[in-house]
Image 1 (cartoon, rainbow, N blue to C red):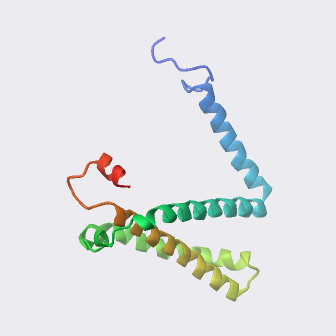
Image 2 (cartoon, helix red, strand yellow; image 1 turned 180 degrees about the vertical axis):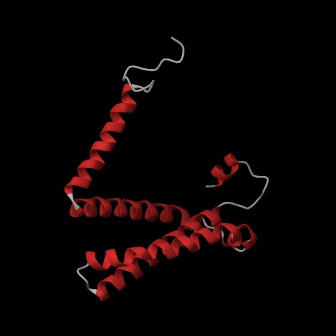
Image 3 (cartoon, one colour; image 1 turned 60 degrees about the vertical axis):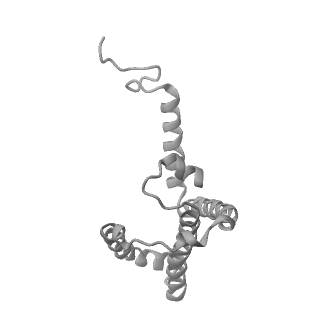
Length: 152
């Protein structure tokens, strides 16, 4: 029977462990969605705290190894075309303002603070992460992936 599927899990040739993990993943997010906004908020906060802890670990290890001379090079020509999509995306994110305002009970001051802090925090995190990476990896167009990973 050439081309016949139906592996051990009956999922078109996928192993049973793949199907079990997919079902577990789907079930976890379905349960989270049914649990409501507070549960989603709690899980989201947990992930954000984990992200911040990982960034602090990266900064703790990487910042002492940054070589300032590597940060002096710039080439804005490689950024220009792709930066346009980021700008368009930034304007699209403003569609969330009414939702945030409603979520914070119509409090304009808290909404303003949430948007400002919610925009500045990722910007600062990204700038620090970029500083660590660009300050540790010497620039050379001849470097292989292995050489770049070794520099990190």
